[in-house]
Image (cartoon, rainbow, N blue to C red):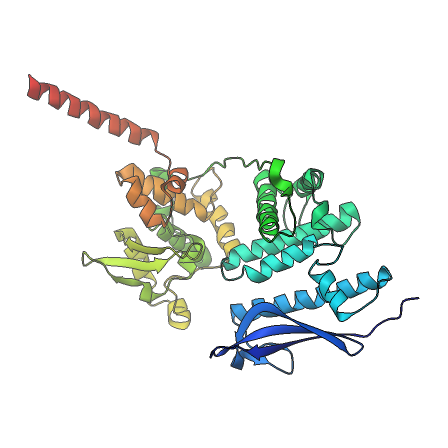
Length: 412
């Protein structure tokens, strides 16, 4: 019978060979006095390393991400030790390291790939995107457990059947707080798994991408926007509930600036500056893409800012406008829509579509300018947001006819 070898896992730092204030983080595996070390390919400033806890200190995004990665490594090494014990293999520090890295005959696993991806891509992914990858990771774990009865699976066992089974599982997956996953929701999970699968190919953990014959099928969503009449109805309606009135103002502010919920929420009075024309502009950036934005403030937007100059939120939190949680904002917007007799699904993002269509494009603003104001890196993205309205087409054609008639008269 295999004896229960004593396993010890510790993290520590070493200095760079070149002069640097950063330290390289290492992991040490010890089995009955035998040990092996390896770098986890992450660094940390010397003053942010807690040598007693063997973890990073503080609550910065980087330290939190690093500590989560260390926890994943710790769990993965213990799992490698457990598997070797269950298989009756000789337990050594090198054997555990080899199993963890997939360098033994077992090969890399899906969860090892996910851990590697989430641990190494932290600098290139936005917080919201990282959160989505963790949600996908949770779905994969539930799928493996509920459908296959396993905790993990070798990458070499991933095939078209596995992907098809996972897609069908996602379509019936129902989180405790939501309805079942939509088609596009399922496809987003599959898209994230596909990106990680391609990473495995680049790392040479697998020789063939299981997604080679799998096609993602997104359904084009109907992008709601408010008409000029509907926008006017909201502007003209006052609400006695302070929370609803504030939400109405913040929503209208987005209709006249094109900012998303998260970007409006991040604004402070310092973001309002004088532009090249001497008028008030917003100087900020999209949190989603880091794209810098310079938005001239329309009179409607300036009035809303002025309305909240002396608000308690601005004095205490130094925010430009009072913005509630996304969930509460969308709840209040349902109340606003109902009161105004607007029979369409209105969410905060409807304001961004309204800016692109009713406020800008339908008033003759070139799509290239709208794209810049929205912070898009591709014009094709703006074309999805900004529908060309029917009455705008009529106006354009009328202008064309008048131009042609003028040209004929001049020729005659």
